[in-house]
Image 1: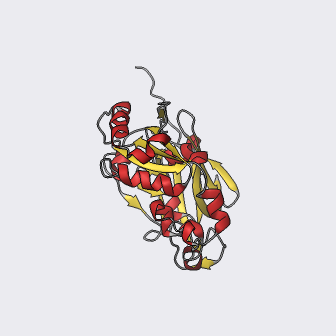
Image 2 (image 1 turned 90 degrees about the vertical axis):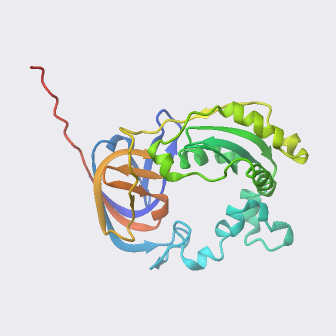
Image 3 (image 1 turned 135 degrees about the vertical axis):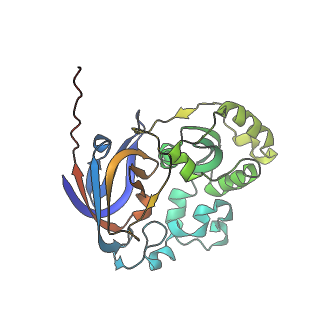
Length: 274
C-alpha cells in the first residue's frame, strides 16, 4: 500500500490496546494492523502550515507558519503557561477561541508514564491528552471552571510533583511501580485552601495499554529535517511516536510535512516441528 499527503497528528481511541490512525490530508490510515510490518517514509521537501495551508521553508510549534505562530491564539505563550492567561487584560489574540477553549471546565490530573506528573487538560478531551503523553495510568485531581485557574493549581502542585514527561524513558518503558492513589492522597494535602472546593471526590484511575511488540533499549530520534527517507519494521506506537526498529518518529512534531508512505506486509514463516 502507498499513500501520499501532508501529515497531521495521529488520532487514537481508548481501546485495549489504544487504536491509532495516521492522518495524511483527509486520508485516515489505521496503523495498528501494520505493527510488525515494514514502513517507509519519503519526505517530498514540502512543508505546509496546518492552519492557513501556505507552503513555507520552516514550521513552528508542530506545524504552523511564522505568521500563524505569532498571531493565532492556540500558539500564544499562555497555552503552555495557562497561569499567565491575559484574557482579563483585554489582550487575548482571539476572544472566540478563549471562550471555547479556555473559559471552559478543565481537569488538573496526575498521570504516570515513567514517573508521576501533574498536568491539566480540557475536560472535553482528557483521554486524548493522556494518550498523547503515553500515560499508563491517569486520574483527575480537580475540576476548575477556567484554564487559568487550572494552570494556577498546576503550578502550585508542580512545586512538589514534576510537570514534565521524560519522553525517552516513556518510550523505553523505563519506570518503577507507583501507587497512584497514594500519590493522589498526598497531593490533596498540599492543595491550597482556595482550590480545595474544586477537588473531585470520585477517585477513578484510567489505565492504558499501547500496541507494542517489544520494548526498546535505546531511543534514536528520526527527523525529516535530517533525512529525506526513513524506513524500518514498525514495532509499536505510543503517545505520538511510531517506534521502528531503526528509531522513533514523532508524528505530531512533523505535522505539515508532505510525505509518501509505503507499507509492506512481512510474511512470517512458521517453524515446523521436527
